Amino acid sequence: MNIAEAKQKFIEHWGILATQWGINRTMAQVHALMLITEKPLSTDDIMAELNISRGNANMNVRELMNWNLVRKTITQGDRKEYFAAEKDIWKVATYIMEQRKKRELDPMVKLLDELSRVEGDKRNTEIKSFTDTVNNIKKFSVHADKVISVMIKAEEHWFLGSFLKVFK
Amino acid sequence: MNIAEAKQKFIEHWGILATQWGINRTMAQVHALMLITEKPLSTDDIMAELNISRGNANMNVRELMNWNLVRKTITQGDRKEYFAAEKDIWKVATYIMEQRKKRELDPMVKLLDELSRVEGDKRNTEIKSFTDTVNNIKKFSVHADKVISVMIKAEEHWFLGSFLKVFK
DNA sequence: CTGAATTTTCAATAATTATTGAAAATTCAG
DNA sequence: CTGAATTTTCAATAATTATTGAAAATTCAG
Image 1: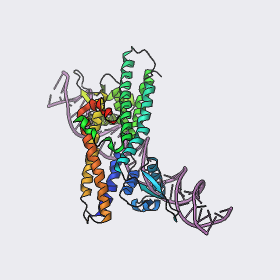
Image 2: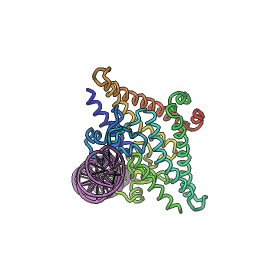
Image 3: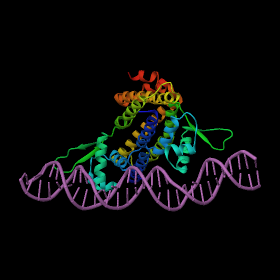
Image 4: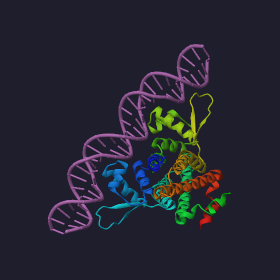
């Protein structure tokens, strides 16, 4: 396997893996391409490399910027915008956790809060059982939220070093 | 909001959240229904509650069993099969981590292993840069894999207790 | 300012994924 | 065994999600 094939394979499989994580395949491929490309890329570069349309390239680059995974770079003497991915994999992981926490965990806690305020007699078995379940999931979620917040703050130290020792 | 509305809402929103995690919406709804239902349910019960076809109900129940989230229960004097969800939310989280690790993290490490064996002169900047990136991601993944393994073993203790103290 | 270069939007369409429901397979009471 | 009850499969179809590409909007050199 030569370098061109390897890059191709990385991009392709990264996209496949991403779909299992609920991430758009093309967005993951754009990200993969940028991770293994030294110099910043223009929309035209991305279109050419991945064989996708301008609209698609533009949309996914902007979405990657929303996730903080990609930044615009400035180039004087060129009207075109160029983009580069964050290369530090620990930061990448942190940014992804940050966004998913905000987009998924936060709304979940909000939902569970609402549901635990269900009306009715708390001595009723059905209601008791339901609120117990909801409260358990809520407790879990709030805890997970805290753990992730701490991980985000601690950045790359979050699982190097002391983490594993606790469990050994 | 009364109990029926609350249950309805829980099932509906759980399904929506699940799609963001790359999980089939109906599978998540079947799971949600079973989490808030005391007694085991038959395929017919699920069909009626969620307004889905027999094939769909059957497929998703079996998939939930593959994830260890749901078990068959035995009922004498009844030909029908009944199913019940694991109610302990810590176990649920552990089972999900276990499956996702196996289905997603393991293939990823395998891919990265292959890619790091790319042919060519290691003094070539392009090759060097590519293998560096791949190796960084691999190192991260292997580490994540270990952390998750330890968490799975430690079960509910994994984030109660000593975890947070490390970072405080 | 002007207008060419570039980016963004979004309706139409394509691709993918989920669902149905009937036929086939399996199970098990009698 | 038999055959009714039940479960499973899977081709056809529906629903959802992603992509295209041209038109509109924006940017900026001159």
